[in-house]
Image 1: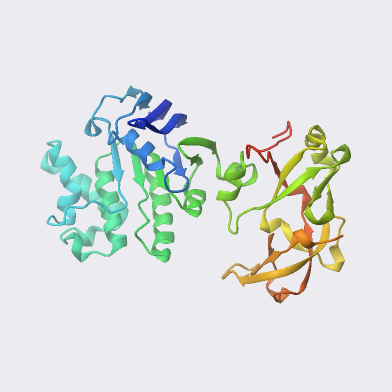
Image 2 (image 1 turned 30 degrees about the horizontal axis):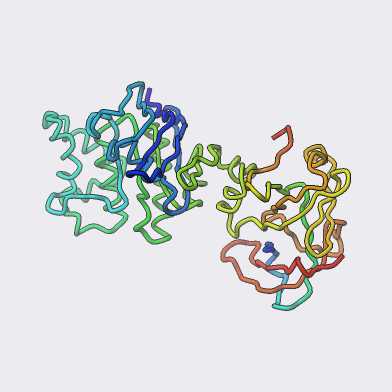
Length: 329
Length: 42
C-alpha cells in the first residue's frame, strides 16, 4: 500500500502563505500530475511530500505512515529532478548504486538491482560512462534508474522533461508511461505542461496560487472544467470566452454583437436557473466549426477572419480568429 | 474567437467567415468568480 494523503496542508514562508490548505489523496499505484502556471505552488507541494520543505500546518501520510516529522531518506520515496542531479565524477553504475550503498545494502543486491533497473530502462551499455558522456535523454534515464533501484513506495518527479527538446520530451513521456505500467508504483509528477499532464496522468491536480482548483481525470479536466481558469489552461488553442447573458426561458444565450444562440433541449434545465444573469460563455475551438451552407444552423453567424495559422500536423489545420463582437445575425 | 477549420478552407485575413457553434458542448462560468455553472447532472 503506497497511498499519499495530504490533509489541510499549508505552507507559509514567514507571513506569506503560499499553499492554502490542500486536501488530496493519491491512490496506491496511481499516476497523479500536479499542473499549473509558474508560482502556483506545485513544486513546493511536491517538495513537502518529499520532505525537502517543512509543512506549516496539516498532515502528510505516505503508505499509512505520517511523515510530517520524518526526514526525506526515511519517507521511502524517490525523487527525479529536472536537472537530473547526477554526480558528475561517478559512473552511471555508481550513480545508480549510490543510494543503496548509503543504505549499506550488500554488493550482490546492489549489482542485481542496478542490472534490473538498467535492463528496464535499456541503459545497460551506458553503465561505465560518466554523465558528461551522455545525452540529455540518457541522463534522464539514469536519474530514473537511480530512483527505480530504491524500490520506493512512491516516485516523485519534478518537471523531469523540461530540459529536453520537444521530440525527446514526447519520447520520454511514452517511456515514463510504460515504466509506470510495468512497475505499478504510485507516482506524483509535477509539470507546467498541460500536454504532459493530459497524456501521463490517471488524475490531474490543477493548482492556482496555492489553491487546488480541480482534481479529476484528464477527461474531466478537459470536458468538465470546474472553473474558467481550468478551462483556459487546457487545450490548444485555449477555450474561447465571451461575455454573455442568459435569455428568456433559459433557451437562448445572448452573445456580443446581437448574436443569440439556442440552448439545446438537454441543457435547458441547467440554464433556466440563470435567466437574465450575466455569464461567461465558453466554447473550445474544436467546437467552433465552419458553418458551411449544408449544415448552417441557427447557432451560426457571420464573422471575419482576422488571422489564420496552419497547425502542423493536425489534419484540421486551419485556425482562425473570428471577430464575433462585430458579427450580426 | 478561435476555431479549427479544415485544411482546404483556404482562409485569408479579412475574408467573410460564417461560423457555427456546436452548442451541445458549451460551458458557462460565473463572470465574477470564474466558477463553472453546471447542471445537476454534472
